[in-house]
Length: 473
Image (cartoon, rainbow, N blue to C red; front, side):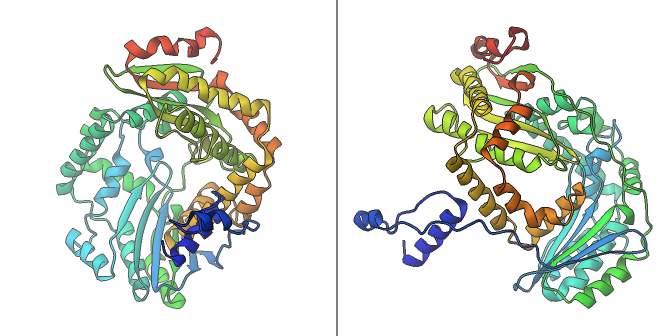
């Protein structure tokens, strides 16, 4: 490894708090003598200067001059997604999003693709639970044209009936593939138990619901959910500000305000359940366990995130060290605080060797209980905080990532200081805070446990974890 690359690796490892790195491969004496300089205090994330304003029709606009690369990202966020689907119209939001790629009133699908390609890009449309996005990343000089193209797609989609059967078939194939993946099945079972009939609980919709969908359903979903009042346009990168503003005014000012945002925040309570799905002959068991926790707007959100990263949400976490590194039960355990609009749950998920299904659960619960009984050492917590601080800054160093963060903040209503103070707030979490978060929220006796595996080999192992047994020991 040459010296320049070595220095880059040292910088990254120091920034992320991952420890020292050998000074030079093949030179053990020199490696022992040289260690990287100690990391300095975590640096705050600097949000670039930006301008946010509203058009008369209620559409919001945020302009962020950023970086030196002559490219600009234009991203439109719409407060509409699977949360807005009628109960028996599962997947209509996803199909409508795909259908919007098939041209506009004035552009065929091919002409639309060629227009994006002329600007050095492709148009991306992504449908989420609470929000859908439309993105294009183009050369600097095409910023105004990119605005006009997105405006055309979102306001005048062709929604051709001829493409609907194909897209519906694609949705059914995707569903069939998801139903063959134990990890997806486990999460779907977990969500269903937690959220019931709420849209958040339908990760794998009934096949017959998709089969019954029509082009009229897609058109109705579009007309019921798309409009200026639900829209926020973001432009980040190098661009001609006056020209882009002019394009936004010309392209969007005539758009109807449309429907107001509909909020559908679930009321979720912990459910102490052991849910087992039989997979005869499976060499592994897929497990997921967790429960509802405070959402993104809570003062506990960042302390909870730090607690999760220390407990199970990073490669250096306690659960990963225990059941992966020390015991070899699994290759890929992972914990997360999964978020939606003003809603969240904590969960730990892993694929474990069948014979260690019960022992894996025992160790996971054991790590939770250990953290409840005593706070983590200061040095361990600081390593996690350094990791989160460095990762946050690195992850947000692109135009697209910056827009993603701003979209998240705006969706949740977190305020302009959230990103500016994130690193500071992460590093303000104390060992006592971590212990309190674990005790207050991560209660094993209230957790939902979902397991997919060979029942003939795991039933006895799971007996101690059934609610009727009175505990999770």
